[in-house]
Length: 274
Ligand code: ATP
Image (cartoon, rainbow, N blue to C red; front, side, top):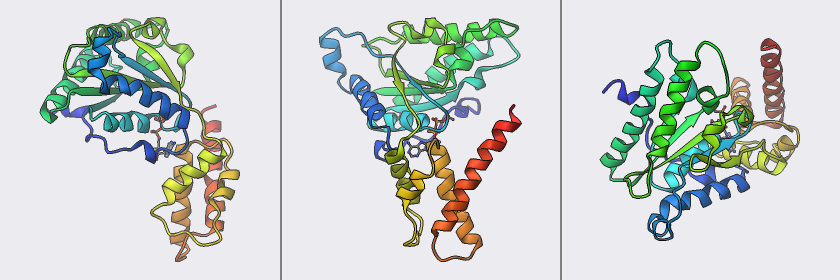
C-alpha cells in the first residue's frame, strides 16, 4: 500500500480557466479530450482510440497544469509520475513502476466510479529518449513496458486510459513512442506572449492586495521571455517584499524588485549550470 500511494496525487481540481494564455494549446487539448467524453460515438464510427498526447515546450509553461485540468474536465482518475522516477540501478524496476502506474489509475477510477483515467508522465524523454550507454537495458525495458501498456488500451476496455506526457526535448524521443496509436498527437505549450503574461499575473495576484500604482500590463511588458512559473514567482516575491516593508499593499516598486530578482535568479542558475 505504501508503495502504491507514491504516485497518487489528490484528484485534480484545476480548471482550464486557471491557466493563463495557452488558448490554442487548451483548445487542442480539449478537442483531444472529447475523444474520452464521446466514447460511444468513437466506437460507432470505428475510430482508433486516442491513447497518448504529448505536450512539448519549455519548463514552467503549464504542462502539468494542463494535464490536471484535463483530468478535471473529463472527470478522470489522475495519477502522475516523472520520467526520472523510473531510473533505477536495478533492471526491471522501471518496468514494474510502469505496470504499477497503470494498475493504480485503474484502481483509482474503479474506486471513484469514473470510467476514464489519465496518467501524466513528466520528462518522458528520460524514459523514451534515443540514447546509448550503460543504462540502456533498464531504459529499454521501461520504454517497452510503456509501449506494451499503451498497445493494450482498447476502445472497449474500461476504464478508458489516456496518457499525457510532457517533454521539452521532443527531438530526443525514440520514434517508437511517436508512432500512430501512441503519442501521435502533439501540442506545443509555448512561453506566454505579453497578453498571456498579463493574464497569468492576474491569476496569481487574485488573492493579493495590490496598490493602485501597480499596472500588471506594465509588469507583463517588462517580463518578456518569462514562463508562467516565473510569473508566479514574481507575484509571490512582490508580496514577500511588501510584507517585509510592512507595506499595507503590494506596490509597483515591489514588483520591480521581484522582476529583477526572478530575472537575476535565472541568470545565476544558468551560469551555475554552465
Ligand atoms: P515543467 O516542464 O518544469 O514540469 P510545466 O510546464 O509542467 O513545467 P507547471 O508545473 O504546470 O509547468 O507550472 C508550474 C507553476 O507555474 C504552476 O503551478 C503555476 O503556478 C505556474 N504556471 C505555469 N504556467 C502557467 C499558466 N499558463 N497560467 C497560470 N500559471 C502558470
